[in-house]
Length: 121
Image 1 (spheres, rainbow, N blue to C red):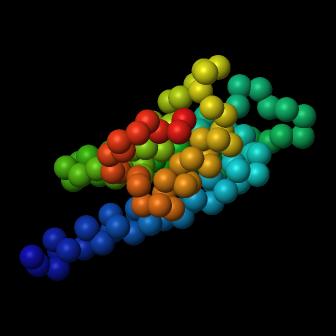
Image 2: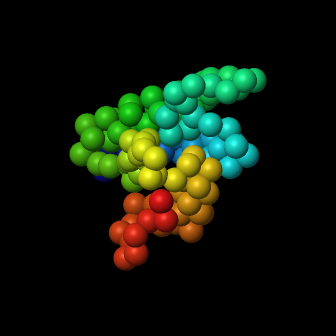
């Protein structure tokens, strides 16, 4: 494999690491009660502001998913995050619970691996 073929892979790895760091930071904020990581709140409460970093993270996830697909690859962390962003409804857990469960899976290295038991959300 020549240097040109190695270079895109390292760029993909760098993009993945940047995404991971931003995601973990946002998950930690969500654990503190910040709303809007998995989707923009329908109505902001008094004193609450839009979470621009979370909006950008969702946009980045969509773009990364496309970039990985173009290279006939997938990025499991991004895929799972985007899946969680589609969960809306009264029977789905709140953002704090989703954030805790997702962060736990990331820390245990379980993201992208099949699970035998249903996900905690």
